[in-house]
Structure formats: C-alpha cells, structure tokens
Image (tube, rainbow, N blue to C red; front, side):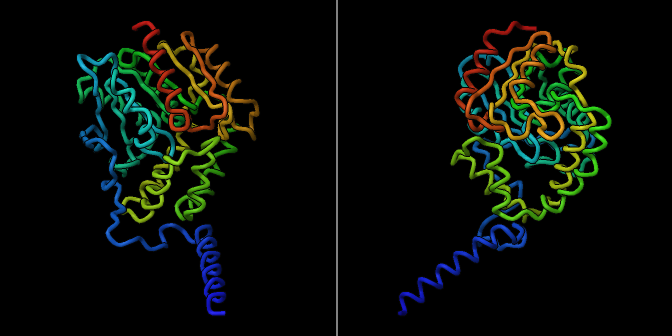
Length: 333
C-alpha cells in the first residue's frame, strides 16, 4: 500500500511538473545553484571577441580559421530572429577548414550590447563598420532568416564590400504590400508578453517549429533561451526581437532583387513552417526560391527535402557542401 501511494504521489508530481512547464513562465521558475544565466556566461566553443563600433555598439563575435595558408574567403555569418551566433555551431567547424568564419551576435542579441533602436539599415551599417574595424575589404555574407534579409540589404548598400550572398531560409524575399504591412503591425505587439513570459514547454515548441525533425543538438539553444529569462539583459533582448520583427516588414528588399549584383546562393527547406507566409501569400518555399532566383541576375537555388526553417542546423552537412561548391564555382566579383 505504501509503495502504491508513493507511485501515485510520484505520478501526481510528474503531472504537476508537466503542467507547470506549460503554464509557469521560465523567469518565474528557480534556477539550479551555481548556474550563471547571464548572456556573457555562454560558452560558444571558441573565444569570444569584442569590437567597439559607432553608435555605442559593442559587438560580440567569434573569428575562426583552422586551415593552412590564406583562407579562400572570409564569411560573415548573420543569425536569425531571436537567435544568436550559436546557430552556426554545426557549420563553422567544417567550413573553417577552408574559410575564415566570423559569426556575430547582432546588436540586441547574445553577448552584444542591447540598448539600441533597431532597424535593418542599422544592422547593415553594423556589418560595414565591423568590416572596417577588422580591415576586411571583401566578404561573403551568409544569413539565416532575418540574417538573410540583412545580408541582401548590406549587399545592395555596399557592393564593393560584399562579394557574394548566401541566403538560408531568408526573410525578405516575399513581396509585402503596404496594406499587408499595416495589417501585420498591430498583431506584432500582441506576442510580446507571450514571448517575454514564455514557459519552458512553449520555448521548446517554438524551437521545434523551426525543424522538420528537431535534432538533439538543438536542445542547447532551448536551454540557453530558458536561462536568458533570468539574465539582467532579458528585457532588452525581448525588445530587440520585437523591433527586429517590425524592422523586417519596413525594410522591403523583394522589389530590389534585380539590383543585387553579387553571385547568390538561395537555400530553403521544403518543409519550412514560416516562409512563405501561409496566411497572406500561400505557395511553397520552392516557389519563393525559384522566383527569387529568377529575379536576382546571378542566383541559384537549392531545396532540401525533409527540412524545416532552420536549414543550417537541421541539414549542416548538406548546407556546408552547398556553400563550399557555391564559393568554389562562383566567379569572383
């Protein structure tokens, strides 16, 4: 009887814990002793560098090259919305054997400074200022989602700096009318409390939605996101995410794709849950990729089957191979 009661108590405890994981915000839950939740405490696997840029930006980045001789290219990696440079942890170790790989935390994210008014023009200028600070004269921009839209804008603004574009599940390739942007704007404000006060289970489900089949390695990002809820810069991070989302709608690049001068590689997952916008546009990632490649004069595209939005993390080997082949075969500007 005692054993039976103990088993029932265990089951009740398990059910309560499961319910709490969906209902109780991550920042309301206790943290295990000895765990440092600050953004600055994250281990990126490589030394974190910092550079002071214009506008009070303190940019965090990693700079990795593990080949011999001069690197074939310098690639700057730009992560997506609500993410950080760890998004590239399954790509850089392999690519760094041939290329100098610089992955950044965009201002507002990760270990970078956070108290900034964000626009995509601001982010594009950050890329230019970083290149100037590091004395980089020609770079390849590789962007995922939000980072892809930033890469396009930077390529348009700084064609002498940006030699090639690699766009992975890139935002910004769909054309939004002014009416559509007006309709989206009020709803962007609604998820702010839901994002800020997300529970651990909701955080997990939000990450899982980025994948066709979520790899176990992605759990490190879920863990970090839960810990950030206790970080001193958490409110500013949440603000940056919302501002970034709004900025994406008010920096349209789709009408300007024909002006992109750089050789461009476009990659989407066939099972992307976010692109295209199913509510307003319908269609498939294949349609977005094909139409964008037709409008960009020197573009090619690849579709990965059984792959979601987080292409570089879900299909790292395929992504790395496609990037290597593209950089090897595309002509130098």
